[in-house]
Length: 376
Image 1 (tube, rainbow, N blue to C red):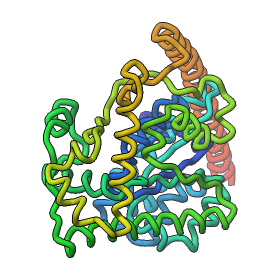
Image 2 (image 1 turned 180 degrees about the vertical axis):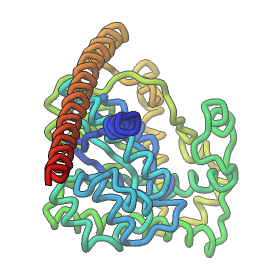
Image 3 (image 1 turned 180 degrees about the horizontal axis):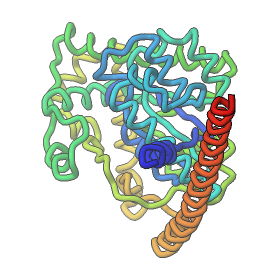
């Protein structure tokens, strides 16, 4: 009896639903992918995580099996399939299913999203059909400015801080970065960045031609225009964007920007870098940055735009309204969970009653058979 009840309880605890929508963010190093995912996660209808296909010996078949579970094509509780996934992937799989169950209880859509930055193209032959089947929203994020990308990568390499805390970011922002100007070093790094962006662009076009929902976005646009972030969320949500409760909410800042000033203020040997890039195709990035700085200086002080901050967005709902909404959702969730628990109890009771009746029937048959043997 106790074993049966424990088994039923375990099954109920493992219940989960497949998210109603799926989004994927493609990018390369130091292009703002972590920040973009944090911004998507501000919607109560979106659950995000970082890159999944790293720090594990992923085989092609394992990637396929794990994604099929995430998208609902395979049983997410299948132990043999789960054993092929990394602990991080299994954690997000369970998190997304629990998230979907919670949102289903309150009538909210549920969209899961993660980053993929490691050779996604090598799985294109089977990914394209999977993405089309589940209408996965594929977002490609890149920077326009190759020099700023290099600046960010050098800072990351020198400090080892991929995502610094607020205090660390403030310290790093106060320091200038020196770039090596030898042609074989500076130009080689910029060409590597250029090739990575070209590769992203070609793959984005391939995804579009396959009839998959795809969107190319630029980090600079997202930082400068809050409406660009809203459009990104709308794309990731798909049909769920029509649900008013899916609007982005205010949350604490978790990702901090370091290099917000002009390149001349960020690079300690700027004039040497400028001389090294003169007459190359990469000089346009310095020229564009200088032109932007001059244009900002010509504007009246009162009209100068404030430096964009990730945690200062115009939100439609106040903190009190958001608190009330969350409390209402929690109350509704509690009611739904109580109903589900009652159904589970009724199921267990009916199952045990049927089992008892079957046992009694079998016992009667056995007794009758023994009586017939005695009469014989």
